[in-house]
Length: 216
Image 1 (tube, rainbow, N blue to C red):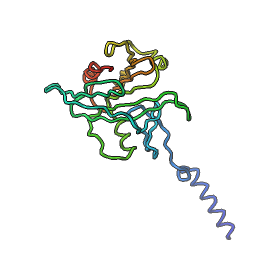
Image 2: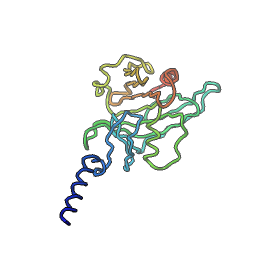
Image 3: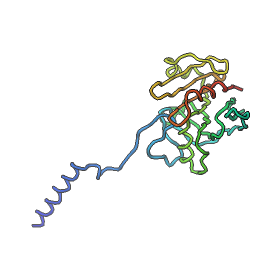
Image 4: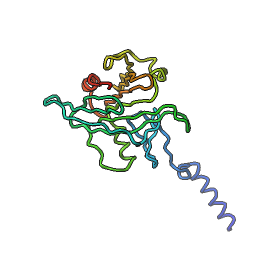
């Protein structure tokens, strides 16, 4: 009788395993997303993987903000260490993070990012909370420590444009309305100016920001 009971239990467990295997597996999350979007499960290390690399909260020069001209609706931002200034919508907040691109433990390119968001600046000191907020910003300026020639695989299908009097390359996604602008800072570094309307703003607003962008 005992043998029959044990056999019945084994058969029942086998049926449950094949019908609902998720009960015996640990839930995981491995989907990487576009920059400006976070994974569904935040990392405990203070970093989030995006389709461009690993974003993390590290020491990045904060820059200075200045009030805009009355009635312009735009404020000023200048970051002398990163080497740019720009106008952005009055009342928006700013935040900084780093972006590292590479494979495995080898980092081929790193960037210092400044995010501009219509949402209030996060008050949390938790790095994951801060990073998740900064990645959901419609406008981001990133300074990479590589010349624009290193981005050839990305920019080869772009269209020519001009930023601050310099030749630049624009990558547009008409379906999503996103724009990525690459412009040379100097022989060893490149700016990427990112626009993602999913988090606020429109193309007209981005053009105002882009037209004000000045390399120092």
